[in-house]
Length: 429
Image: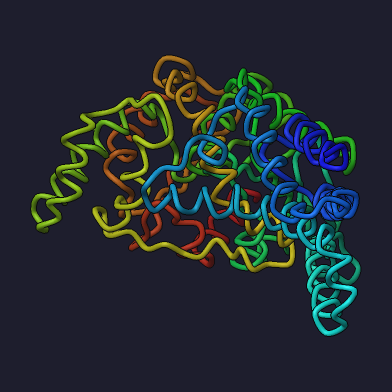
């Protein structure tokens, strides 16, 4: 039985080191290698191929009870719950349990050449797949790179490194727009050096909005030093416009201007409008199941991610929104990042979103000390539009201007890239 002890120890170490499973290429490769070695050690025990993975799973689940989030909590019977199960525990199991099982079966497999070859090919394919790094297409004579600042992935692209720098903060907690920015808004690279930051994913339990503001400022300072420009342009979208505008209000000397699109003002009040509108849509379209679910849970705010799941599922239908692709197939994402995209959003939403609802820009940012520009969709969702307009009208700034892109909704910048590009060219002078 002593040969099964490594499976228990590895489960404990993995749960402390990577409580949500391997999230990066190096973590995935090490997980495959160590898990195979653990299985190989356990192979001395007859039923190791079953018992070693079982002990690993039990130990890992017990040790990581200290953390919470959709990817590690008890499975949730819903569409997003299935996604969390597959991309959370499922991916972790593929990277740890499959190599461990094959390691434990090695003596048996070696006596069967075809099966041994198949197992080796499977393990090699898995390792190579998770080892392929993220990359971005080069720009001859310009800058095109993926880097990391403050633990956040940062995509930098521009045809001329001497051009003004534009920092973009994406919308969803834990989300990324690097693929969409490069694919849909490559035209910005002629006017700016475009830096697209990710929002922090899988944060610590004590994460706050102030931490996200600090992230924006840290990336800002990196870009100022890197490109020798004392001021940059700050563009923020949707939920990212909360830490974005707070950063501009806190340190105006670092920015030429603040540009908000899909601008959020008071997420708590917005969600109450979303609730009423989605409930009305469900009743009027015969979606009795959705109406019953919303009525049962009552209006927001909710304590965790699951209460907001119906909003994410049905708000586009309720508001007849177009949904340009996130471009997750882009080379800027590794295979693991693609797999974990929605899981990262769910886990980060679970921890951070309730704290983002404490912000009300009508109270917290009545004034900006930099020029303020806003690019809104003509068909923006009512839950955001009705709160934005009075805040914009009362906002004091050295100068301000509102641009409305006809026919577009919440993701106006991606729905009408040419229109957005024209606006940004005008803003930059």
